[in-house]
Amino acid sequence: MTTERTEPDRPEPPPSKARRWWSECRLDPGTGMRLTLGPLVLFLFRLEGEWHLGHENAPEDDPEPEVWAIEPLTELPVRPPNLSRFVSGEGGRKVRLLPRVPDRSLVARPSVPLHVLPGERVTVYVSFPVWVDVTVGSQRLSLAELPVRRLSDTWFGSSTLHGELAYALKTQARVRLDEVPRRVYRALTPVVVRNEGSDVLLIDRMNLPVPYLSIYAARGGALWTESVTMVRRESGQLAQLDVGRGPAEAAAGGKLLSQPREQARESLLVRAFSSIMSPLSGGSSHD
Image (cartoon, rainbow, N blue to C red; front, top):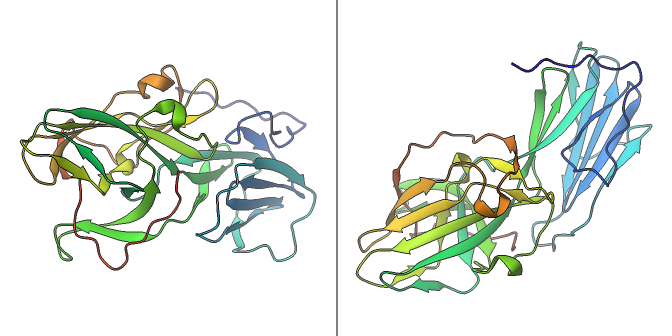
């Protein structure tokens, strides 16, 4: 059982760039912070009895800037975009920003289709932009969850009647970890694909059920999830899905930052590979 620390008489300043962007800070009434996290700009301001939260995202087709910063505010910007107000009678000044996985599966589309021969296995590294959970007060009440990058809607299923609404994600589907770009607002998932079928497996779209994943911070600050194994035993689009325990091997010893949105059973049979896509299909946020 964790005991909450008593808040000091003097609040701590917002985190500096030397600290992780998900660090906790404290805000007095009349003060706030602006977080720039790649394509997302978030404003949070504390007033007596309420919080003001605003945010804006760069257009979907814009390249993702690699910079991030947290800056203190002494006044709320005039008419910040997408402003919301939250009534809070609690005197707590704590603010915590946590990375979370998206609320839907990701349909990752490699820039070049990948073929896995029968009996072969490959580890594909997929990175995706996280969501930011804004929590306040000693009880960590969530004001909002904001995607760093808004992804296009897409449909993944055997037909337009059978399937699920997901997010479209373009990926390089890199198979070498040292070639994967690192950004502080993206989480990295190693996907192990084993083709135990009798024919070649074409991966031109891969369904990654990220709501089953946690987010960890490696020692260097990079964000990771568990590893995911997809085993295709027969010809077709189905695969046995297994989620690893704890952070991926490359992030061993990493700190757990957020739990999965959904609990996965030990083993799932899922439609994992190329499927009919609806006209909603797009693709954004190239890693």
